[in-house]
Image (cartoon, rainbow, N blue to C red; front, side, top):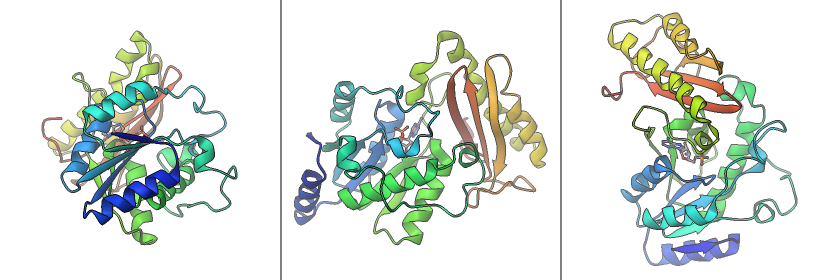
Length: 284
Ligand code: AMP
């Protein structure tokens, strides 16, 4: 496995790889790798021959009061995880390599689907995400890029960007990988105290209740929204609990199969998100 820090080295690797007739997959991450990330590597492997994994904690997507400084970073461990998962190239650029002139003069700004869910409380977040993903697409030139359904709004907006701006890349996705007790895997789970770790289970528990409501024939969105807000309580402050259309991300009037229940909450100081696409994964 190669570890490269510069855009030019990645460019050379991609050029050689493509000349050799190999298809390239890209899995963008912010590091602190876990089984959710490696599952995306497995998804990529189904349709490509070589896999690039990027590790970059993107300052552009963090608000001033957010956890950019304290975001977990552990490159040595990440390299071991990536090598064991069969990654061919890790691109771990320093900030100056991604933003040589400081903040970019041109950003990719989503014009729809950002006024709700995470976009409402994190102004500028998805501009930062889309801008860095567009840059990674330009640097790595992947045939396929894989993102997790865990960040559902992000996935929708990246798909939209690739379509609307004609990026020659197939955007694929992988399902949410959970701990045995249901907690969605996240790099931020490392910040949870033992007490908060237990409290965090309330997010996946309310989503499971929503799945049961749906299976039981409930179709009124208010029933689901009420259930999602039940995640709140001692040490857990719900930021949003919504049922939205899978593509427009607009709140639904009637809950149909494929609607997405999404929840965000602060558990102690740690902000966690989780979601469930109704009517999928009967074992959830
Ligand atoms: P991050 O490093 O948190 O920015 O995530 C990098 C990629 O991994 C994104 O596409 C995420 O949606 C995805 N991801 C994060 N956690 C999970 C999970 N538990 N299951 C599946 N994908 C995940």
